[in-house]
Length: 535
Image (cartoon, rainbow, N blue to C red; front, side):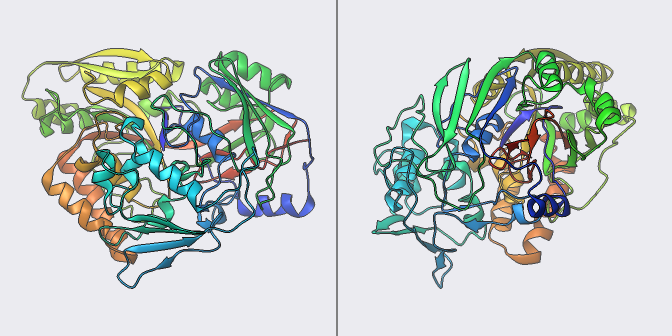
């Protein structure tokens, strides 16, 4: 999932024992009331599930969508395990491992009353493949038979997708062990069969626990319970109101005083020490947990000077990851120098670059004494500003002059998603879409995933040798899959160095005294608003 900006990204895993205890006692659970959520510094770019690929919109779609399969509204480990949702069960897989057939069960309805059927999912695929939609979801289904023809506008659906009554079948070019997990992403949210294909995106009717009752861009988003939802997902609130573009410090004070309940964007990093002292950690209002995420500095390998891997390696040796991380405040995470997070199966700690004290001498040797000027794109928030300044100062020591260009988060994501944008470096983070290394290695760094718009391979890394190895790894299963990805991670980071990986973040969330039923959803990477209630 396209994550929040560097330093603000937060993901966590709430202890299962805590969750089970709360569930058993019913503590803090109540029906009704309005949860007030701020979105500091930004607004969601879109609430169209086939277009959205940001943390902010994703959190809202999470509680309004219905998918064939989903991740339950529970903490780890249960919340990391794919379960059937609209599907009657996990798919029937053909003997050759290429065709997956789902049976869509009856009973789900959109908030308009329209029944959810297999055709509702087919419409989602039609919108993903429609050329003018520019959906980043194509990155996750480009291996369906006939995908290229659909992307060229020759067909509304790839030939590999077929609907027959309540059956939906998907045939792939070759076996892909992670397909079912991919289908739990918001891109594959069911939509009404007449939902328009619109490059600007639409806000469709929803079949999940809540629906989007109102949206006024840059002012207001209102969610209300779907009157037609009778599924198993918990939902307790009468309304959820989102207020975008709030001042982050003002938002913090509102939450502290109970005038707001939560900030989807995050809490100012300067406040965490005080919150720990006042409320402790993981007790009632201040929550901190490790994350399946990576914060990174992508270097544009298609633009000089970062076409040179030695210069990219020099950047990795020159940056103090601990100094960058320190700008995010207390319990921000741990320094990192690899693509895969330690919470991802297959990770192996190779200790490639210094995590604390930079090796300036080695970095200078790699630059050969040359000087460069580059543009670093980052966000306008205080943490992003401070971290960019640290990077600027440290790269200046090895002859790299950094011009900092700052944008609101949504604008940053939109601009850097266009491959022609003249950025040299961009500071962002990545939240796992699903618990498989393909989502980090292939999605973020495979050359065949580069798209002219909505691009997420921000390094624009396209190395034939590594592309081949990524493809081979994607076909493997079991332990060989994860060990192969682990070696790929090390080799990409050490040899090609398209990124300077910087840290693996913690979630740090602050809620008002009124918020109950707190559940961290590990794949969502934040408090699950589906389960939230008011005390």
